[in-house]
Image 1: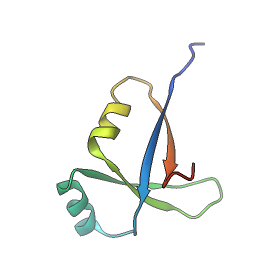
Image 2: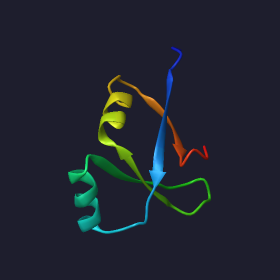
Image 3: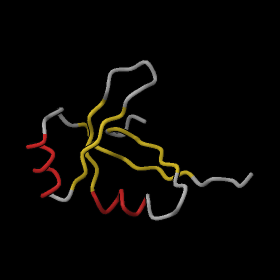
Length: 71
């Protein structure tokens, strides 16, 4: 099995909102997202679109999120 490179991406926590706030974030060059699972409450975040695009540029990308630098 091939070794998969892990890319670390730091994202910023955000207040959950509807489609209006998501459109505003996208206009500003950010991508809204939510992390679910692990027995924890969902965490809404935003990440710079260029950073995310670069992290996803390679097939089979594994991304390690660091939310507000907390890991």
